[in-house]
Structure formats: C-alpha cells, structure tokens
Image 1: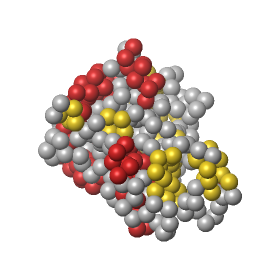
Image 2: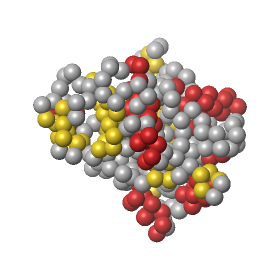
Image 3: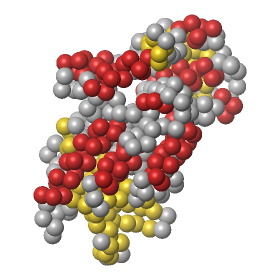
Image 4: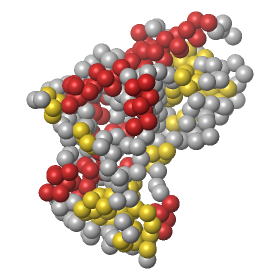
Length: 366
C-alpha cells in the first residue's frame, strides 16, 4: 500500500529488508517462498556493487562449491575460487532469477518505531521515502565502518594511509615501501600483490593457517560440514567462536609463499616514532600503510533499544532481544561460523524468514 504522509510518500509492507547483498537476497528468496509482501532496500546503485568496489584482484578463500546461495549454485567448477566481479555478477543474476524486489539507490538513514509498526526512513536521488512494516530484517552485513587503530593518527603526513576497503591496486599508490597491517586473508592477499612491485612488510600476529588441499581434496570439503553444523549452542561452536575472535586462519597461503615473495613478516604495530610505524621496537620507513584491520559495527541509524555497549545487536539467532519484529542476518557467527559467508547465510535466512512469517500471522492489521 502507498500513501502520502505530509510531504513524504509512505509504502507499507509485511516486511522490509535493509541491505541487498548476499544476506538480503537470501532472505528475500525465503520471504517470497512464504508469500509475504516485502521490499529490499539497498544504498548501492546496482545489486553486487559492494563487491565490485573491493580491490581488483580479490578472490574468495572459499571455493565455488561453498559459495552459492539457496536455490542457485555458484556457476563455476567446484574448486574454483571466485573473484569479486564473479561474485557481484552472481548476486545480480540471483536477484533477477528469483525476481526479488530490490530498490537500489535507496539508503535507509533511520529505523524507528511509531507505536504500531517499524518505520524505515530512506533517501533516494528523487527524494525521501518512508517504509512501514510489521517486521524488519537488517541484512547490512558485518563489513560496515572501517576500523583504524589509534596509531594511525600519529603517522607523518607523508605516509600514505588507507584501509583495505579503499585499496584497489598497487598502481593507485605512491611509490615506496609498503606496510600491510593485519596478517589475515585480506592482508596476505594484498601483501602478495604489492610485493610484485615494491618492498613489503606484513605486520600482525599469526592467526593460524589452513592448507588449500588435504588428502587430495580442498580443505573446505573436510571442514565445511563441521563449520556449518557447530552452532553457538554447542560446546564445539562456542570454542570455534572464541577462536575466531582472534582472527580467521590464513587459507592456502603458506609462510614459504610469503617469504619467497620477499615479504618481511613483522610483529604488531605498537607505536609511532618520528611519524613512522614501529614494529618489534623498530621504526619502519614505510611510505604506504594499508590497514587490513577489519570493521566496526555501525548501527547508529537503528533508533531502537537493541544494541549492546559495543554497538552490536542483541539477538538470538538473528531475532532481536526485546524488540518484536526486528531481525538481523549475515552477522559473523550469528549461529555458526559460516553465518556471514555466501554458502552459509541460507540456513539463517530460512530461520529468520520463518520468524517473520509467524509475526505476520500473529499481528492483526491496523
């Protein structure tokens, strides 16, 4: 239903999905299967643009066999490691195949409660819009606000700094030695690329390693069944979650590969001296610093009492605690270690869609 309240057009649905990435599309398919009236709101101009904006050489560390959403396997050989443009195109085709109602270029600036329904206050190039629904699924994912350490503010102005979310290729950076901070999968991939054209240090603690192949098969053929089933409700799942907080293991990049590329492994960046980053007590004459230091939550636009002291949503498998009708999807370890991955978000999407459907059945229309 569409109406005009004041000067703002209002649209009313059973459910609103905020975010048109992998989580939003997965839950959209599930909502459609339950015959619910819903809309998917996404700030990007096109489906998949969040992936298109990543660095040029990015590849998934999960193979295609474990990178598909429900109902549509990833269109590549099982062992293929998809690049970021392949992922973007796959998501666009997924939205088209299931005719999902994605409203691109629609940014949700606030989510409120008007006493009867959830209200998403959004902006587009054509003006402001208001969306109302009994239920909302926040599917904006775990990659929101780039996290930078305090030491970044103490580096000299002539040190070119950028977060991995802003990195594209070595040729977009000034000349000179580079320090990559963060030795996880993103940091190692970027360091290897930079090492082809310049001196590189890779800083950060070891987070563990997984070989690409074990007994002739991709490592994920062995570990995916465990990761996808060990939920936070099990002792193993809780141990995996605790371990994951120290960082994901480096997949398929052995220490020897980094050394052969000429990359110098150093410890954590602990300080700055004379405007230069200090690792292991030694200042490094880095002219470029790429911060592969992860992301912080950014849910300040949710004007409802659902966030904890650290800014993360309080939820039980995506169902908000204390706020009826509010749901989350695609969070890191939402239910299992695969919850935030392409191949793992589907199970949580079905669970959340069931909760949305139950609420729609229970709420009497006003």
